[in-house]
Image 1 (tube, one colour):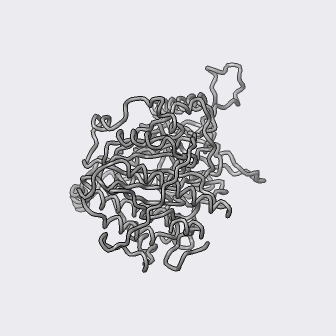
Image 2: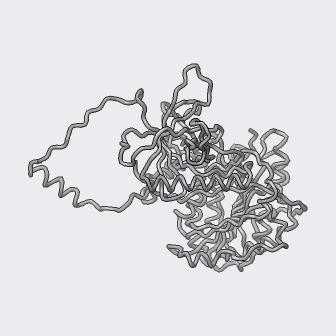
Image 3: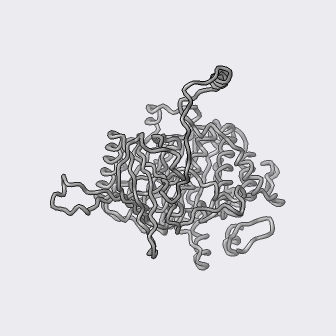
Length: 523
């Protein structure tokens, strides 16, 4: 997947509006007028269902709080009004089944008006939903729109700019325009043709307060699944997650005391989902990481500011992997919107310089975590920080004296009897050899297992053929005039980055926690 984020230049001058530290709600708009919709339909449905079964199974704070799904044919149609994702997988699964039943390619003419109308209608529904849930203290203050289309993303952006100038965008955090390309691999020169090259003109000022994220994605399950999995990342940008403290050195601070530290402000991102957070996959003896534990860190939810003080540098070949434990986390320069632009820029350049220098020296860093709580006895935990070829670092917990168990490692024998050496060599020669491990090539049937655990049949929402379904109500369009400025959101790094080794319910079958007034609005 290739992407380019078109950031408003006004962000350099005007501060962004403060957003509550929570995940945004989601509006997914699928343009089914694609000439290749028949193929896209199956891979899109599978990728969406896989991601949402993860979102429904993860314990802890909800990562995708609300979801609404639109399809655009001759006009927009809302297949799924705003629904709380958790506890509603059966309803979501029925909606995806309905998406699979849409007619094949060539049935509808292409056009951008339906997409714009779907954006307007989705924002209006979100406004109505938020208004009726705010009284109960459950507020979702922001929403993101993802548009999947086979049309040129440049043309789609221009169309959105013209049509959304007078629409209320206060709650809109970002629009993603995803061009789905029917090819196995994306060539860089082909991707550039799909990207808007010109700078926005002054007539575009009405939507410059938000970010338009323009992306191209391959037409296959894995690429679309990784796109949807970005919804599971932490989107809070109110503050940084980690302070990496380095000794300042004497070359630029000759008069400073030796205790002076240089602070790099960073964000933490999960590299993997913690299997212990998946409901149904663990027994009662396993549990997620304890945020108050002195020996563990957690990137989700980002409620704690961690401080890691670098105490030593380690030679690359001097760390045994047997003493590393726990889930790895990715360290990136922070994108906290509360820092001024100059500080963000200097911090980012300093982080890049650190990554480059560690690679050049073939070093890792040993860091000590400063405790957050005022314990009577302070317990320190230690971490190894590993560089990579990208502008990111990897951090993993490293064993300390108290945790280490005695082990003996007998030396290898210099010679082996031929009767055992030959069969071993033969067995190894029969194995297929790969240059690098790619986790995307392995499946464990986890999706099937989670879906079976979540499945609850819906008796009133089974997908029907298009010619047998009643006409769906098309909500009225409401337009209000306002402008907004919102914070940018960091995109996830490549899923295969290589680091160097070392409640009120409507009825028993519908679990949507929609207020009574909002249900009346939808009807």
